[in-house]
Image (tube, rainbow, N blue to C red; front, side, top):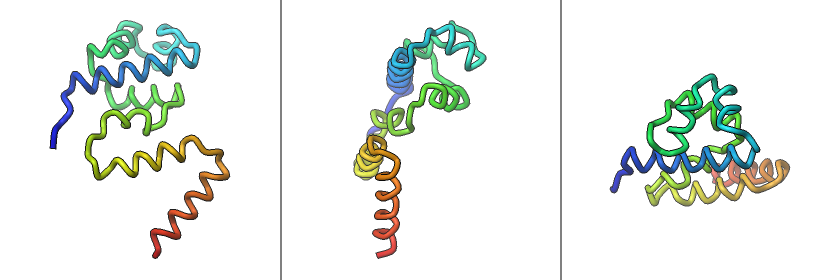
Length: 112
């Protein structure tokens, strides 16, 4: 199976973080303040120049409301995982009561 290079991962994550920062109407300075890191580090992340620590990735996602689906959608290349990613993507667009129903259906299917 093909593997994804670090540079490609950094670029994709940077694009996602920048997109969601802008959607949330935040500046790099505001994000840096919320994350407790430098503006220079934010700039490097968004430009795909440097990697992002796992702690920063998780805090960034929480602050900006980025789902794991969004982060990993372009990074998961294992074809066996694609249907799960698709189902998760669909679920993320449903109202909460329908997500609960979908969860109940999935549990029923699991027990068949």
